Image (cartoon, rainbow, N blue to C red; front, side, top):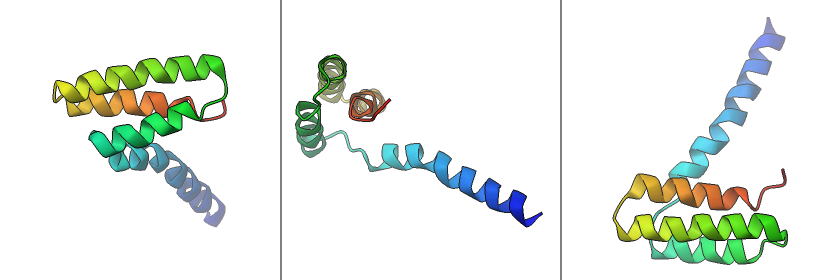
Length: 84
């Protein structure tokens, strides 16, 4: 019983990481500047190209004041930093 509870707790913590990352991400100039720095540090050319496109779309969404779309594109750009 305790083992199942422990496993459920570990799974719950691992699934909240993505939600927490979205909550921390802000669609503003400071957030874009940090993201641009992160994207420029990507060494894998394919990932960097995809992240750069997502960054551009995030900037367009920010200019259009579409916060939800902006955050989605920012998250997609950040995925380029992650090891896959």
